[in-house]
Length: 383
Image (cartoon, rainbow, N blue to C red; front, top):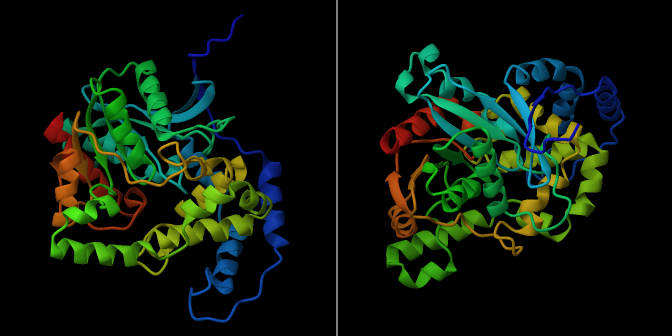
């Protein structure tokens, strides 16, 4: 019997108990670094805080319970472009629902969207308008979670977008919306460029209309002041683009061998991505964060998930903001200043630019109700 490479195979998460026991053992045997001098988080994640979080991961966090919750969502694997791709496919009870593909960011996973799935697919059950329902598809980006990692250099956002178009075609969807934040904010518009006859609209969480050095000559005096302030804001924190572009393999050895090393790194980045709170877990559920981090540990993807940084989002090793496209309408969860709106409209057809939304970087984890409401508000305009 020949193997059908286009087959869609059911998938069920079942981490071996030996892997869970190994994680617990490694956490118990952690060799802790001394606390360096300095106030608060001046030197990184404080030792006492990390000890508390690691102890909870070891003794309080229930992976099997989280695994069972994830397995409530229908999951599948299919081969695309030579790689096995894992995805959730949750159909709405509303037959005329709009198909919507959601792409997660880094250092996240498909877990980013679990709190929004029910709101999107079954609005009637949440006292919301059933006319604004979605059939939801949430793939794991290659190299993340249960999707196979690229076997060679050259993986790009464009290639991921092409893979997602193939996936939606394989699922029988001829017309659909795309959505994403962080890495997903690059993939979503690329899908419109790849398949403008299929994509009805692109919704992203942010990152659109941000200026670059090339825009400075066109700026007014007030806009130039805003640009200078942006440079101060963007220069803070650990630049993971530079770090993972330079030596991802070097750092992956430590993250793969030490769960506390992985925990410290990912929590550090989640905290940086949450500037409106002191800590990520002040606005996100601790178990939600640890479920995501556990997936990185159990699937050994701390290194393989770094390809967007070492390849570069444009395939040339460089970091750039999401490219614009005027082929289909665009909506954004968090708009921005008049400068950002001007630049966004230069390169996109903006159909949705709210000014009252709030939140940090990973909105679906932090404010699932608000995120879902904004997605619905955009697609009702373009469907």
